[in-house]
Image (tube, rainbow, N blue to C red):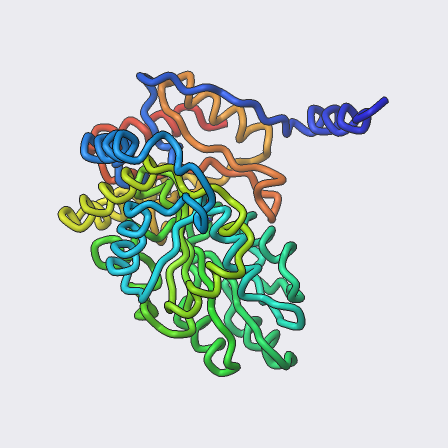
Length: 375
Ligand code: PMP
């Protein structure tokens, strides 16, 4: 039977307790949300939703074409200009998702004969970029500049080191200064994915590269998503103008993809303006994360010290992680549940996001529910 192998895979998945299902979220969910990536609580901010609505009214429901044909509106250009300026880079290029931005950056910066040195904990979109690229990938140990140095030592020709700035599973930060140093010793480029850093790390949420003093460097390229702190949808690559020009000419997920929807660009731009006006939101997200972590560890949970706004709590097994998250939900709390194959080390976790707009009472309630439902 056609696709018969799918049923076999489904059976194995069921037996291993790893079946995933979609759960549509109602518009007025009563759940306390510690599961989304809306780190600054901006997705429903009236200025952000109005930014989206105004953009849709002005430019239409879609961008109508690929960026090089009709899909670049003045709004896209403005967003690119302001994103680059805010984060301290020469230029930016907006994509329809962070995933597409990562595929573009890795493939365009790793030509035939080049070496890609990739952190073992990198996000799936960076991994897929490595798979699509013409260069050869060497995966190195997690957050290990010395391993990067070793990998670069034996290679002749172009090389790029690829890493998340904040790893999405445990919320730990990459050693950016050490990675940049290793790159510079060997003339390699550094490409970092700041999906979880933008809006949370650095002065006013300018991101992890800005905090590490790497913004604007001619050997550093950054990808971001507009879908987390900025409460919108889409992605971007930030870097030297010559790199951005190269992407416009060479990146397939830029050239062959329809441009970002105007509403998403408008929402992201409004969120960026809010962040500029209210920079304390970034520090508040970090504060909430530190507080969540402190309270959870004090209550005896095994939680990773957060470097940004993600707090990861260990669960004994995939089944118990699923049940724990489900029990939290029944008690009114939405938390993320990470388990194989989404986690490279096979350890299941609850993943909590520390939103800047959580009140003390909400933090308290979240910690209580997690404790009461512990397997
Ligand atoms: N990079 C990282 C580290 C992410 O966590 C995500 C989103 N889960 C992405 C890239 C992809 O971004 P987007 O959702 O905008 O496609």
